[in-house]
Length: 245
Length: 248
Image (tube, rainbow over all chains, first blue to last red; front, side, top):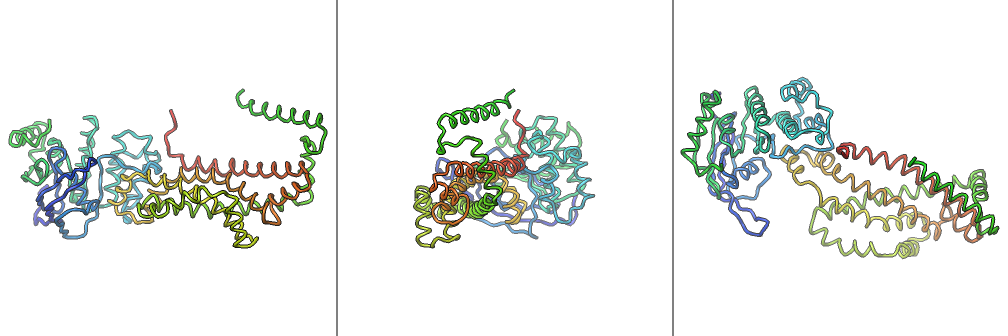
């Protein structure tokens, strides 16, 4: 999906972000991280664990305001977030979990359509404790889309799933996003995920994190398994120190 | 078969009681028959309902006030180190004041009034509720609150849908232990400074050494509290925890 008349949703410059570890030692998570996120683009933060990519995502989500620097918004963000853990409310059914975060304009028709696409139609009256991790993640993804965000934030949303489930969920996010392109930012340390979903991939340096490089992923790169794998190997050979495996 | 054990136990007790009462043959140990007829006498005269309802009202009023205050204080203490630091010595202090002292002081300063009576019960109960709710608040899941924050939940949504459901087990526990404590204190309060209620009736029969009367009122009140437990508190607890996975 190519965008004409590209406009930025936000520009951020985080000069310094430190946090106090459990052992009382101060760690610098981000240093001079600068980025621009284009509207309706799918951006991926890629880097080894502990490089501050999740920290930056939390800053964009408004969950962390204790940093030096600034984030300038083109218009106020309306965040829909998918966390590493599903973070569903255990005392609410699947339906209630989705609707509680839904936008006021979210209609019954849209709801039915969304749960159909996500594959939750049969599960609406279940409680989260009755769901597998894969299904819980689907609910979390549906919840984020139901909130009609102008900024969708995904923090390693496919981590600790078995490979086929993860593949199906990536496909699902891809479908939802293509149907309804919104500005999306996803954190991952899996280059395969980055190529499959991202348009802009921002490579983070190891801690203290800053943005090292911006890669463009083309539709031809994610055309099929072979092209995805080719792109992944190419990036890995260029930046081996950013890969964990 | 297992459900019969409590029945055996109760029937056995009643039999032993009847035998003991008939051997001793003294009005100071009335048997089940004498106690039942005392209950019937009080029911027919209307006295039982009158005093029972007044006591129930006092239990309910002080229960609600103690729960609301205790929940508010416990929440504030669990959330803020400053408030916890300020209140903690007083919490320990009030937890350890004898109930009787609180009742005396309330009556001395407030007069033998309804307000003083209820206040005495509330002061006795609030610290327990606050301690339990403080623990509950400290165990709140931070991740769920963050989720609500990222979706820009309002303060009301946050409280209603994220915080309150997590506190519910603590509130139920505080409520159940609270009810049994409160009704015992209410009886003492009535015993000392009220002219109606079950506690007052017990006082009267105590002075008359009428043990059958004492048993009659105690039994009636225990039955009412059991009904409240079975018909209100247990269904409430089941409802509040219905989302938990069935234990395997």
